[in-house]
Length: 127
Image (tube, rainbow, N blue to C red; front, top):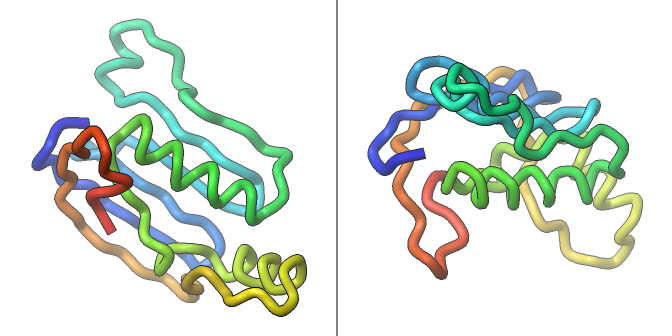
């Protein structure tokens, strides 16, 4: 991902899709797991699709991995306001007494955001 590219974030409250500037899904998170993909150009050049695809983690661990992987591979930060409600429910069930760490994405939402290149020590650039 290069700085200044527009990304599209879409959610139906259960699944989050992150599409790159050409409309290719480069990230998807939902109850079925984590999918972080290479760009269309990289795939056309012969690279495999998946950068980080895993489908058997508990919801909280899966969300944390998705957020980390999107920052690592595409230099974007997915803010907690995009976290599906099922993850927040799982956090409450597994962390009684601990302060809730995030948002609850409910209902359909769409946002266009401009990606910035992360600095070496930054954790995120797009919320």
